[in-house]
Length: 166
Image 1 (cartoon, rainbow, N blue to C red):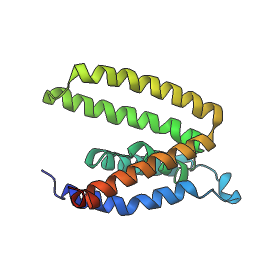
Image 2: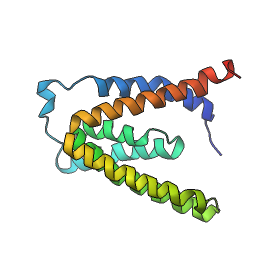
Image 3: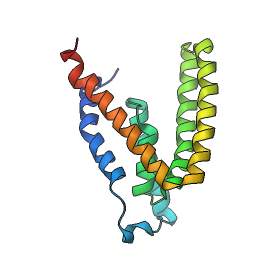
């Protein structure tokens, strides 16, 4: 049982999304470009905190978790966009395996739909990662802006405009 109404949380996220979008659009200042990653125990703590926050978001709400992880790894853990994108894949993989196990136990897996989705996802991830490695931060920033914008628009429609068009 959820303690918060999904619609209330969705509306809250709509208002938080522009922050991530602005952080993605604004280029880092020269002084921040070479900022060093946290080290030692602080690095472990800050990374655990980032992953906990993103994991809570993923488990509670879900959409945009990969983008959220890239932004958090980039701005908080001080990874390049390429490193943040690559590192977020580990988190997403672990999160998706956890969800898969839960759905298998609950008997909610539709294999005839799921297998083609898996194949398409693997191909898309392979091609996307090749492009990211080849073109670097520029293509990642552009893709991040596009995906966050699309997600933002869809959430605004779902939580604020849907009833106007029904």
